[in-house]
Every structure is written in structure tokens, then in C-alpha cells.
Amino acid sequence: MATRAYILIETVVGKTTEVRAALQKVSEMTSVDVVTGPYDIIAIAEAKDLPTLGNLVSGGMHNVPGIVKTVSCLAVGP
Image 1: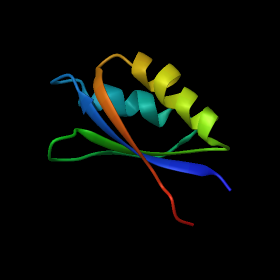
Image 2: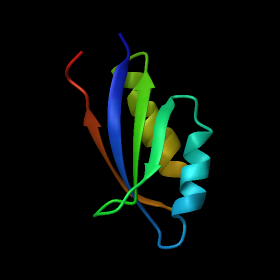
Image 3: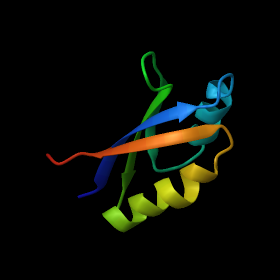
């Protein structure tokens, strides 16, 4: 069973569209939506296990220009 996370993303003002486009190219992202509220984007990512998902967030997403902050919420149910 894959490990899934909902990732709440804050972006630099004016960079939300560019960040969304970059994240949509990542194969582990199953959904990337621009939203209103305290975060600019909510993405859903799935990976084969927790270490792979962790590498995606810390090694991949944090290198995307325009991302200020992420909060990852792991799915715990089926």
C-alpha cells in the first residue's frame, strides 16, 4: 500500500501558478490545487513508502523556486 500525504504549501506572492506547474510535473503528485485560505496550494502525493515520500518533500519540493513553507499531513487510514 502506498503512503499518501496532503501537503499544504505557502508560496511567494505572485509565484503560485509557477509552483503549481512545477509540482504537476512530479510523478508522485496525484493532485495539485490552488486554494484560498492560509495556504496557496494543497497537493496530494503518493509514494511507495515513508522514506520515499520524505525525500520527495525535503529533497524535491523544498528546491522548487517560490515555495516558502510546507506542512505535510500523512494519511493514516485505508
